[in-house]
Image 1 (cartoon, helix red, strand yellow):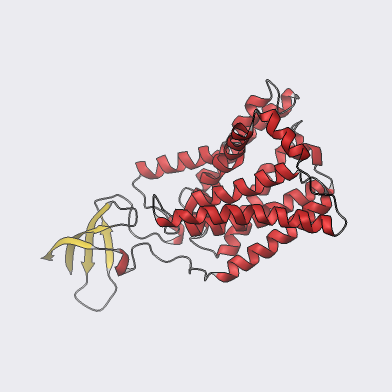
Image 2 (cartoon, rainbow, N blue to C red; image 1 turned 90 degrees about the horizontal axis):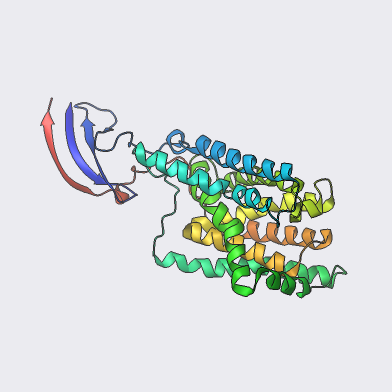
Length: 328
């Protein structure tokens, strides 16, 4: 048996030091890591590490604050209800922070399906993703109007901008309330861990189901769009169903260009819906249909990577820096 000590560069850019055991006879190689505890290969079971923590933290944080908002009984836009209402929306990003801190302290590997773009050219995909997301809503609204549905109007959208104090405060509020508060959690944390053992479609639909359940308390907070729809209504049903293609679209964007692109999609859809005041069940149904078609087309256009591959199994993604051998 030979033990070869070596240092490699992992996918997260940090050194990985360990011992590669080479049996004297036929058999498989094994990697024993002693430079970063717990880092071997990111098998599906290992990549799920932290997923339970994320679910618990994200849902608990949100539920505590939104139940408080419900108990206060006021409008989500007025004090004091506005405080727990806004804080509750940050459950997913709080869950993401907790998981990241936990992973860092335990020296665990970054999930294989994590998209780390930093300042790479891939970030340029965020803009076309933003345009695409807005276009799905606009096209659906125009199609609905053309087939006898409500007319497309910016009247209420302009009032919304005026109420927010102008275009800049409005856009900032739309960016923070939803995209920034949620995407680092849903797509940046949960999605790559789900992709460790399932296809892009299954991961998107499962995350969509969790996302839909997470939104349910909003139906009971006065002043929210969801409360205006009503849980047991066509509007409420269509809103809940619309979360599924949204999960697929944001998941596709994430794999293309990371959290920045998923934020762009989320922001594009939410902002366009707000500006066009998409509240009619007819228009909602068209938006749902258009987004399902677009999501299906996008998913079909890209080959799905096979889940469950070890992070460090590909020799092209691992550079041996130094090593020495010893006989035993």
